Amino acid sequence: MTIAMLITMMLGFALSVSVAVSIGLASIVGIQVNHANMLISVKEIFNAVNKFPLAAIPFFILAGNLMETGGISRRLVDFAKSIVGGVQGGLPMTCVLTCMIFAAVSGSSVATTFAIGAILIPALVEHGYPKSYAAALQATSAELGVIIPPSIPMILYGVAAEVSIGELFIAGFGPGILISGALMVFVWIYCKWKGWGKNDGDGRLGFWTATRKAAWALLMPVIILGGIYGGVFTPTEASAVAVLYALIVGMLIYREIGLKDLAAVLRKSVISSAVIMFIIANAGLFAFLITRAGVPDAIGHWLEQTLQSPHWFLLGVNAALFVIGMFIETSAAIIVLGPILAPVAMHFGVDPVHFGLIMVVNLALGMITPPFGVNLFAACTVAKIPLEQIIKHLIPFVLVVLACLMVITYVPELSLGLRDLVFK
Image (cartoon, rainbow, N blue to C red; front, side, top):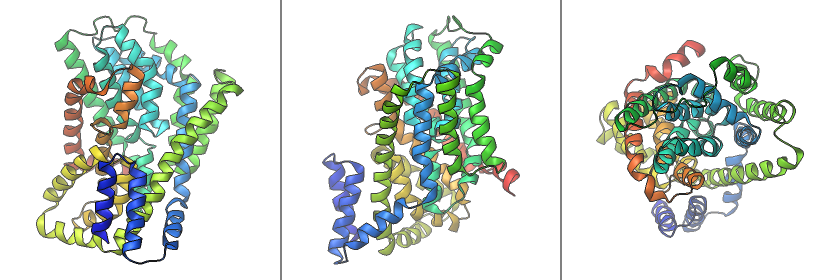
């Protein structure tokens, strides 16, 4: 059964069938080969999506789209520019810092790419940066959308591997800050070397002026994250609060969202949510079938015999996830692989929360690596350039994130220190 499922899935990928449909077809083939009742598919698809934490996904997507339409993202750009925009290379640093702040509410890297890229890619080009560099920078910076909490992939991993989503969220701050800091230092040095960005401070608002104008936007992540860690509401409830806050600020305070805009925002959010939920439904059935077939146990035993130490296990898993992330959508990869690899990681003494951060950061690289990097397509859409043009500028960014991934992997205190301080 397992061989038939894998062949069907890989054939679907080769024929450019969507990931969700390929996984679903592979599952149906597995059921037929095993002569099982087809009602299993209905039951397991329903069970896969019938989980309360998953309700956070459409709400966080909607919140991100409301922030984009309601002027919140533009004010965050001005605020970030007031902090780091005064130095040479300050505009690329502004891009990274803005994505970091925006990520503290949106939970989605694609939403971050469109919301911030629509403002900063034209600004970077206007200041003399190559359009391909601007798109590569935006795609990479937007990856922070799934690392800085709240994060949709963290929610998926928490549900799939039965790990506390609150602990995953707070553990994401260390890796997120590390990657943000590394990217800002890199772009500052790179711009110095290239001689770019000598006039990046032009048009920059003063810090207090930018802070005053962005006050309501900056209060949003404080309310959301403060409410989660203060015990006021759960991460799922926080997603609904984020939508309500973005709606109030966008419609009543900034007054940049009208009733006529809501239909387009809701339509965009529904489509994005439906895509993710369809992947979750099919991946849930696939995961159930391979678990029943004993694949996770077999992989676990093979890894135990082949990779004798935790260090080699983590290195092997990172290499595998990096390749998998290039070809399989992040959400599907987490739902399928999370229940398989998390128990093996625990056998090697790796904390499941730490392992979740490793998976999320690694698979997030798949969003900025060809051939199926969703952030790349989004950034290229905003910049209106073909994908192949940004590869040259993308490689250094990928290497920086890979270096950060190694630190995250082998320095667990970076992820678990704050978690242990809050939860233990």
